[in-house]
Image 1 (cartoon, rainbow, N blue to C red):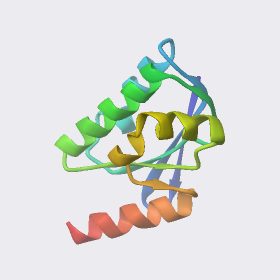
Image 2 (cartoon, one colour):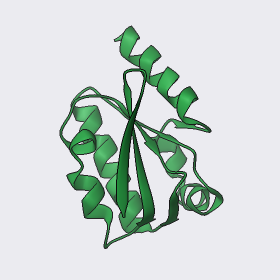
Image 3 (cartoon, rainbow, N blue to C red):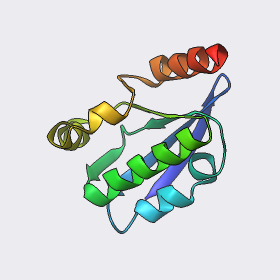
Length: 115
């Protein structure tokens, strides 16, 4: 898995590319923007072609750590394969999910400004 990082205004967008499963979840957990900073980030899932329970567990764990630091992780751009995992597990209840990165980044800016 490759993890790309870009900025949209002042919001960091993290975009994993490839499979998010037991063999790659640790790469996501080791990403500094996701694991170590107290900044709210957008996680773009458009290029994740497969997500299993280990990958979902990594996302939940990262979101929990972000919230402990008074930050958040917002999800965007799920393809149908990833969306099915979220629907089956009802993980949608744990995250703010947006169709595109711009909408997600706007949510982050608004949320940060109100805190």
